[in-house]
Image 1 (cartoon, rainbow, N blue to C red):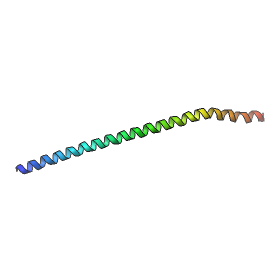
Image 2: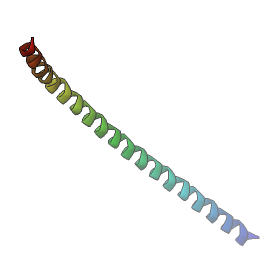
Image 3: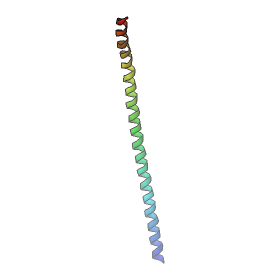
Image 4: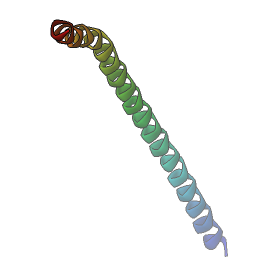
Length: 70
């Protein structure tokens, strides 16, 4: 009887350890996701900045030929 109680306690401890490990893994995954999202946002921002910058240049270039045609 006494032995069985000891086994049950050990099992509980193992389960608790597993839960802790799973929580830690989840936290790591969340951190990785957040880092990836931040990177994507930065890249997106960079693209938009480039488009904004070169977009103006492109408009100027587009406007010139049509002026010449007129």
